[in-house]
Structures are given as C-alpha cells and as structure tokens.
Length: 529
Image (tube, rainbow, N blue to C red; front, side):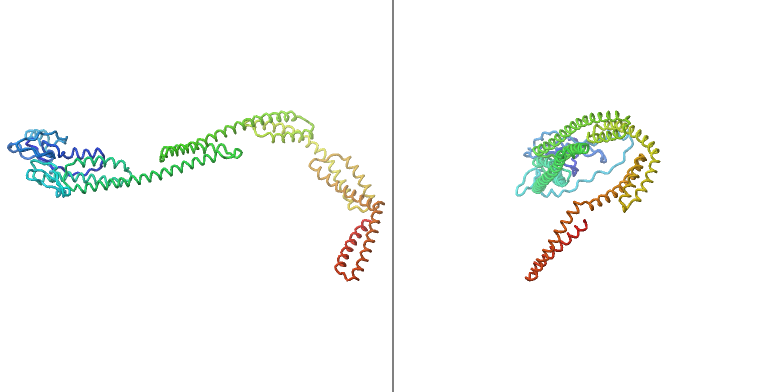
C-alpha cells in the first residue's frame, strides 16, 4: 500500500432501489469481501484538503478482511486483487504544485463527515490479534480483520456492512407493499439477496436479519396469493365479457331472417369482433380451453350469420330479377295502351296493370325506379289525353245539366204520391225528356242520377202497394185467415170460462195470454185486407 493512502471508512449508503444487479453491486463493490485479504483500505477522496507532505515513513501492514485462519506474524499475506473502486489517490506534492500552477486554485471544500456510529457493533467484538467476531445466539463466529485500524474502527466497518444489508432488507420489505411491483420481481431480488446474506461477513443482529427475511418471504407469499386472487377475478371478469360478446353474436345469428336488419346487424357483428380482439390484446388471459370454447361459439355464430346473409341476398337477387322481368312486361303493356282512345276499357286495363305491379314485388332500387318512371309516364300520357277529352265534353254537357235539373224539379213535385195514375203518367213524360237531354258533366252525374232514382222508386213502391191491396188471391187468403183467427179466439174464450168455473187461475192466465196474441195477429191481417 502506498504511504499516501489511508483507510477510508465505508460510508453508510441506503440503496434507492433493490434489484438483483443492485444487490450484487452493493455487496461486491461497496464493501470488500471478508474472505479476501485486501492490499489496503479504500483511498480518500480527492475533494479532501491535501495535507502537508511529511517525511517518508516505513510501510505499515496491509488491512485484512478475511474469514480464513489468522496468518502467521512473520509471514506477509499475499495480496489479492481488489474490486474496482473510484480513483481516490491523493496527488503527490509535485503533482499538486504543477496542477495549482496550471489552473486557478479551486475553492477548498470541507471534508466529508465521519461515518456515524453503528449500533450494530454491539453484536461483535475484536480480539487482541485484531480479529473481528460476531455473536449469533450462543455462538460466536469470526468475520475477518482490519489491519492497521483501531479495534473500534474495525468493528464499526463490519457493523456498517450489516447496516447496509438491513437497509436493503427494509427496502425489499417496502417494495412488497408497492402495488406496481409484482411479487415475482421481489421474490427474484430476495433470492439473490439471501445468497449475498449467506456469504456476508458482517457484525450485527443476524437473527433479526433472518427474521426480516422470513417476514419478507411471508409478505411475498401473501402478495402472491393476492395477485393470484386478483388474476382469478380478472380472468373471471374477462371470461364474462367474452361470454357477453359471444351471447350477443349468437342472438344476432338466431334472429329470424324475415325480421333481420342486415346492415345494422352486420355492423354490430364487426364491432363485436373488434371488441373480442381488444379483450384478447389488453384483457386478462383466459385458460386455453375456455378461450377456445368461446371462440368456437363466436366463430360459429359469425359464420352462421354470414352464410344466412349470403343466402338471403342470393334469394333477394333472384327475386329482384324476377320482379324486374315482370315489371318490364307491365311497362311494355302500359306503353302500348298509352295512346288508346277507348277511355273506359283502357282505364280498366290500367287499373289491372297497377294491381299486377303491386303484386310483382320489388326489383333492385335503380331498376325499380327506372321502370316505375316509364310505367307512370305511360299512365300519365293516357289519362292526360282522357282528361282533356272529358274536359271538352264537360263544357258541352253543362247545357244538358241545366235541362235535367229542371226536369228533376218537376219529378220531385210528384212526391208524395197521392194520385198514382197521374204520377205515373207525368213520370213517364219526364223520363222521356231526361233520356233526350243527353249526358251531364261527370262531376254532376252521380248527384243528378240518384235524385231522379229516388222519385222513380217512390212511384214504383206506391204502385206495388196498390196492387197488393187489390189482388183477389191475396184478399181471399186474408179472409180465410181472419175466419180461422176468429174461430180460434172463440175457442179460447170457451176454455177460459171453463177454467174460471173450475177455479184454475193459472190456466186462466195462460189462456188469456194466448187470446191476446191471437187478437194482435188478427188485427195485422185485417190491416192488410
């Protein structure tokens, strides 16, 4: 060891994060292994103020940290390669003077504070030979030595190494409670840390450290169970969400074809597929048998829907082709009739073509619209020509209407019929004039014809009534019926007298009802005669 290097007390550093690499670097780089014999203590940082140069002294013995048997005093320990450490050699006076001459003198910074006293040292001791021991229960074991240091410094050195392990254990325990840190991550770090603890040569409460490790293991196990429960719940929720997707797809596929909304249902099927993909990418992973079964149902529903849709539209296309051919025929017939002048017959023919058009069904929208325009154009051409002729005729028929309205006034004056013979003669004269008057405008035809029919019906009814009343056959039948009814009434009167004499009041009441009925019927027959 150079005469300008002095042992540096290992600073107490609490690691900010415990990872496998961090644990290894903490134990390998920050502290020397007790089983190795180091060439010297860690050098002092360059930021310390450089001491005044002193006369060269004889080399001091190298510090040792080892768990091997104590070397013989007369034998110099063989130096082992030290772990890499930051440069910290104090520059020589000449080098320092050269540097100070080349650049401005840097401000003098205060030396770092001396390491704090570690209470963990109470679990160890240093013997007269400089060997450091730790007490574990009733047992005492050697952890190493620190030549060139005072017993207290040597003990504090190994105690601070224990404090680093305890801090790492505390940090591991704290990480268990962090929701974003998975139990496996902590378990991996803990496994590596336990290996380091098993090989560590430190002074401190090792039993407490073992207890902390056991508590961490228990906390990790609890966290594993909680994560397993959460995963199970997430898996169950994911399965329920997938089941809902599948159930909706099956419901759509099972919809009757007659009420299926193909566009809306097709869009919803595509949305369900995207929802499935999203759940598969970002949701909890399902057990393979469960996911496979759900996917098979979902795929079956989609395939069934697609097959039904293809079949439906194939049939629809065929139906539309058939409707198109039928409507093309109807359009051809309508166009052939559009120039006809046989107004009544052609109008009836167009009505029949319209009925057939409605029954033909729908063709494709483009074809249907085009054919309908042609059919309507043929209809419009015929009925426009017909309307023009009717309009001209209506102008001609207005004079006829005036004549018939005057005749209608004469006919209505015959009502009510009091002199049947005079009414019949006058009506025949009116009817002859009515026929000679000719047609009236179509809009007035129904009104004027119904009015004259009412007068004709009244005269005819009066004539039939007189005939019935003077018909000898009818009169004879009525006389015979009157005679029979009168004889029946006389018979009932005799029965009533006999029943009254016998004191049969109930029979008397019944016979009186029968007599009243016969008298009513007799009155009706007499009115007809």
